[in-house]
Amino acid sequence: MDTIRQNRKTEHINLALTSPFSLSSDFDELSFIHRSLPEIGVDDIQLQTNIGPLTLDYPFFINAMTGGSEKSAVINASLAEAARDTGIAMAVGSQHAAIRNEELAHTFNVVRKKNPNGLVFANIGADAPLDYALTAIDMLEADALQVHLNVPQELVMPEGERNFTNILAKLEKLSVKLQVPVIVKETGFGMSTETLRQLHNAGIQYVDLGGKGGTNFIHIENERRSKRDFAYLKDWGQSTVISLLEAQSVLGELTIIASGGIRNPLDAVKAFSLGAAAAGIAGPFLKTLHDQGIDELIMELEVWKEHLKMLLLLQGAKSLPDLQHCPLIAGGKVREWCEVREID
Ligand code: FNR
Image 1 (cartoon, protein in one colour):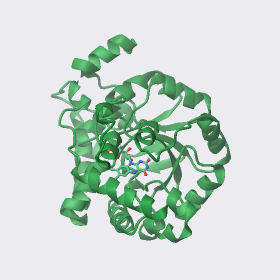
Image 2 (cartoon, protein in one colour):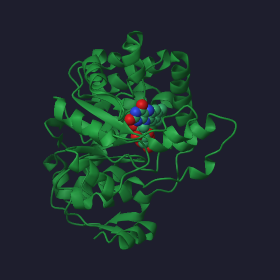
Image 3 (cartoon, protein in one colour):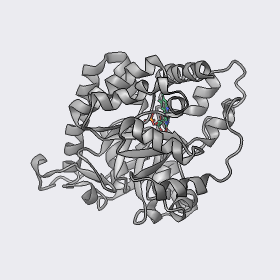
């Protein structure tokens, strides 16, 4: 079983690296209004943000990807070094394999060893019991726990889960019992207002919308087998932009993180303007590490930090909350969605 799981991890990495990143994006349907007189300087801008009790020096992080195989231990070590050298937070991939088999714990906790003082997020599936959550957090001395939702992916996997009852009750228990923030996270299928309200009613405070538009796990799972039964489903879900729009009515109640298909600092700034407290990026940073190495990844993270400041300046915004007062004009399908769903 462990070997099957380790192979799956490696296949996920290989397929994520070779899958075509979508060229068009709902982020391109959103435009800021240019301001010729922002009347601020780069030094006026501060990028710090909060996820509950956690302060992130920069409002973007390396999102959950891997762990559980020797290859992924090497990747996690490099990602952790890049996170440490740039001061950004990072998450590991699902820790279930190492919770069941302690011998694999090093493939995850290498992240904490490389980055003793950085912000690190643990990761488990939403069906996991409380003791799994505690073990996952201990393994990394994690600052937060991501709990991922991935129903479409499970259904597409022949060996995947088929029963999704009582998940909300489990999430509620985790958020009550754990000492660290619990971030409920989608994995590239996005969320709706209805889902967000269900989570809020269950006591969840932190949500990563994990929208469609970037790494696509229906595509990846289909590529793993010769009979590609679910190819027709690869467009399933809400994009990150649509998910952010769906989140507008719950912004005061939930801390929202945007991820899924965030390709560049401008996409991230659009997400902040729509109320996201932070942006998670997975596939694109993995690709830079794989294709160009750790020094290039560190340089890319530094460029993101610098460009984010410049983009806030362009909008005359001194901080992320200021950006929420900078209007975005929506076109095309995004505008149609807003009309049908009556989102202002
Ligand atoms: C992922 N992702 C993921 N998410 C999660 O919560 N637990 C996991 O174990 C994994 N595993 C994983 C492996 C690989 C190789 C990739 C690329 C991604 C999903 C990830 O965190 C994110 O939600 C999606 O990849 C969408 O973001 P990007 O890639 O479009 O920035």
